Image (cartoon, rainbow, N blue to C red; front, side, top):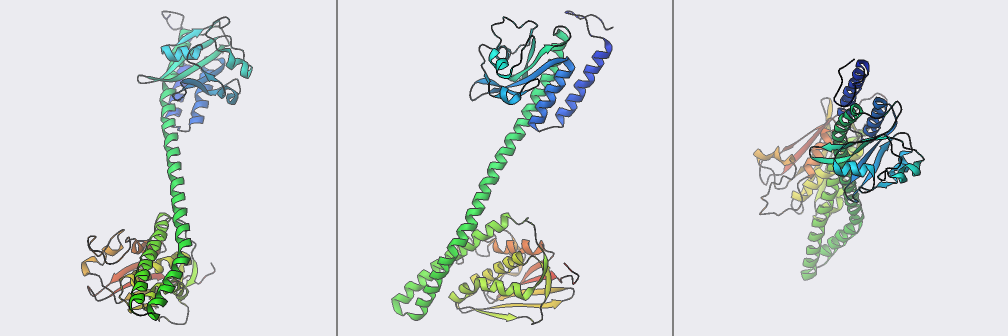
Length: 422
């Protein structure tokens, strides 16, 4: 037997060792668990087993409504208990919380502080109670209660054990609540991002058709009219082209946010991809009287790629060519087999790229022009998107140019499609 404590005889050695082992196990598990519900259940079940009592419960403080509420309980329906707010005045849990002191009552009958409404609500008869505050540093966050000791009364040793459990529990619950709050905040941000992306996608899609009509009519009026009317049509066309560039940037923003989405690769003819991409920018090229010149063989050049995403990449390259090429310019689009892959290109006769900036043009938001002197609209993310989409499919992209005002060529290499069944 252990020596006698100041208030009572210590339990036998085996019981003490068993309790200490359970406390160590509880501490280890609490430190490795961040799910709040799992933590609460583990705490009350362990406390009930160690103290050999009929029920245990955790009451946490609701700062907003200034009362305690049952976060978890054994021996009764926790959902029903959660419906009962426990006041800080006129309840034993409230007394423990307010005074920040443990409380042992081995005879509850007749105690005016016993909040009987909770017991009646779940049909549980409480005879004895041990309650301790849950504290983090100098702040009390809740109360841990044990009810109805099975063998004899609650003791000071029980109080000490439950206090240790409450100390570990308070920290673990606090950490779990922080993680839960962080997850909720992240979910709200994710929802907001999804709404933003959906809006950008919907807006760019819905505005594309009416804007295409405006560009078509403005182009027609500019070519068929003379004098002041032709000049007005030119202004309308320029404004519509700027809006179209903005729409493409909106589309690119959604692509940028979903760049890590799953690619559905299959064998696809690069000619089909290039022709579809050219269809996307045909009205813009026509508005600037630009000509698209094709240079690829009739025999399909098969590559392994996600057709939709690869088309988006070439659309960005073509938009770049249209944007930086002069009125009446020529844009070359071609492809050929090269080694173990297929080489494609988009060539323009526009403003060109200085040699020291050939690699930098693929950086996000990069602009060749100074931000103080802008002649070309756009956010500077189209080439970044193209590079990301192509490299994600095992391809390479690079820029070539002889210098300023000498045009530029963007080349894309993609692996040849595997001829085995897909």
